[in-house]
Length: 315
Image (cartoon, rainbow, N blue to C red; front, side, top):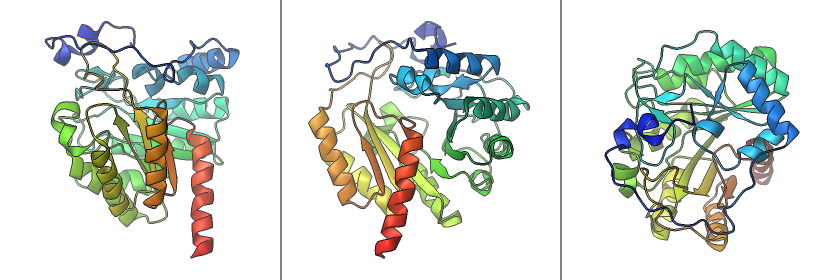
């Protein structure tokens, strides 16, 4: 699916003029995946007919993560009902849900021996609950097959879903609830036109109200045209919503039809964002050019848990 040409993957972008893609700096480049671990992970995913956001979104870290047996499972198909200008996931009319998918995901998690699992999905505005029950079924299936594994969900915003959809996911008790704000509010009309900044923020705040013990997480991309003050304001908004963990990574343009890269943010600037975020009270911060929502998620979860315990010990 990820090999389709841009005009077939993204019909809503086909009419757009091509955007120049600047040359990547040295700190962005990664090696092509070739390891045996990568191939084994790929084969297990193929055998279970599973999609990953690693492939569908063209993540630059796929070689490193898969070589270690880590993959972010993308449930509910490969076709998204929205067409965000930054995203490389295919846009169109999704297929019906596969009722056997939760079991296949649980089997793959067990076979890969994952200690920490990340589940994400396309936006499913065609479903009454936005796919919330499918998330919950998948969480329960993993808990049954791999009770010691911790589970992180990276959900859509449930903007068009019926009341109670968010509650359905939270009641299934994932260990981490992640939903990405993606960018500063002023860029939403061009970067994330189908979403609403304050709805997404409120979604994460509501998770904490429903289950104060659940870790919450959100991320943004930089290099889309935002300024430093805008990023710092997003951090303040996240902390006001009691979000525990922030990720900040460099936006990379998937094709010439996607939103252009405004600039490549330097590693030193990322270090500055990391210091600022810790200063604002986040329990965990990941801010590097190659940071993505699920990058090193298992190690980060362990640190997140330790940081909460340390904070409670100081209280």
